[in-house]
Length: 123
Image (cartoon, rainbow, N blue to C red):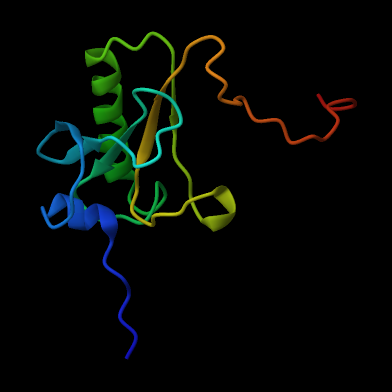
């Protein structure tokens, strides 16, 4: 019988895997990712296991609230809040997590996204 691998974020929440904690609330945690894209990049993760942002809108909303609170607490004037749903959307860990990404001019992070398709003729 195939057993699914343990969820890495559940393992962190249960204290069975290491993480660098940035903040903890009763319903969520904020940790530094293993491969931050810029200094201060933080993951905000609900303690309840939900697969992605569409799985449980209430948990998603509460987690987004925590990310907004952390953004204010860290006094981030410029930041992106990013999440994904599904492999094709670059989700690699199937437990809801929000990337709080501080931004500075010239930080080298290529956002906003550009598909490479022409914008001519679009309204």
